[in-house]
Each structure stands twice: as structure tokens, then as C-alpha cells.
Length: 68
Image 1 (cartoon, one colour):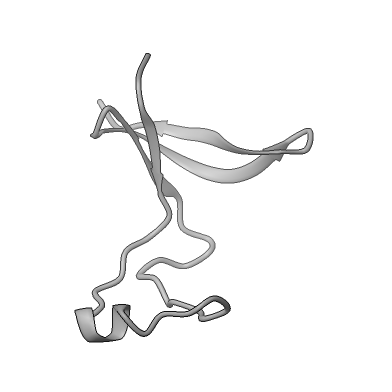
Image 2: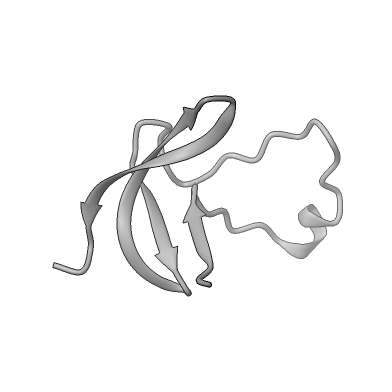
């Protein structure tokens, strides 16, 4: 079994601000909603992907192999 992780975006947030985060808060990430996402396999970047659905489940579509 392998772990797959999709990185939606990143944010630098001081601990003081992090401790004040509440349900309903919006955190602005470093990527546009139009940007592809990084898909990691066992913590190694392998693919670029975009979000989507498959039936009633969340899914990602592979766009590019990053191993090239």
C-alpha cells in the first residue's frame, strides 16, 4: 500500500494566528483555483493533477507525470 497526498496549496501562518483559526474562517493559499495540484506518492512528487469528482466521490485527474 502507498500513501497518496494531493497538495492544494500552502500558507505561512504565524502560530499566534493559527491558534485563533475557527470553523468558518477562510485561509488564502498561495495558488489559484485554476492551478494544477501536486500529487505525492509516499512523499515524493510524482504527478500534477486537477480536482474533480467520480460519481459522488472526490477525485483527481492526472495531468502530467513529474518524473520526466
